[in-house]
Image: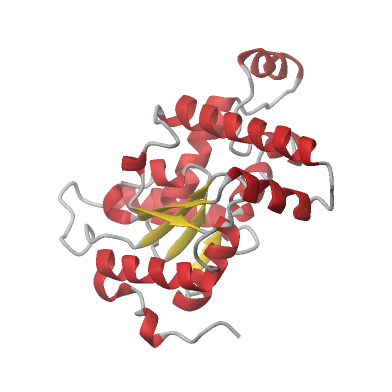
Amino acid sequence: MKPLRDGSIERLLDRQARLWESQPALESREADAPRANLVISQHPFSGARELAQRVATLSGWEVFDRQILDALHSHDKLGKSVLDSLDERLLSYREDWLYHIFVPGHTSSTGYVRRLSELVFAIGMRGHNVFVGRGASFILPREHRLAVLAVRSFDSRVEHWLQANSSKNRNAAKRALTRMDRERAEFIWRSFHREVDDPLAYDLCINLDALETEQAARIVLEALRARFRDEVPSASRTRPAP
């Protein structure tokens, strides 16, 4: 499958919109067939990105993580810094109001979520994608995705935060993770009216304190295969990590 690069995400959106407009009201059974996608959500610094990359390597699917954010802020006059702050966090109502007044072309939080949803849905309808976060498990219909929640203990997440930030300030790590957890929960609730930790929102929970990434990836592959039959290779037919 050819990767989506260099603006082709936007072309995909336009093409998908034209396709929907041209389709008859009664679509064929083939058109209604499930599009297989994997969504990996996480408590920050739980290892979802590493898990997504390994599953993608084993399956041949494409990972969508920062690419989605890059596509969004390439079309917004606020630019990268502000839209980075909107990544799994919504502006407060006061911030939204101030940006609306002082920044021409500002994308509101509501507009951001709408644009994000359009983009994730259009990519998801292509199938064979691995999404990391961005509320994708609440955007894609259940029949088109397997939703996985990657978790680690809070102390383990603190250690990974310290490593990622080359820091020894454990108190700063705890404050940062507490804030990120709160903002993530608020983003999901305000955007999709769902509880981020609702176990019924996910099909599978993977504890990456208990499993190595390779082991977890093969479990996810088998779950994908059970859901989508022959659209993914079985773990027994994939090569081990180098």
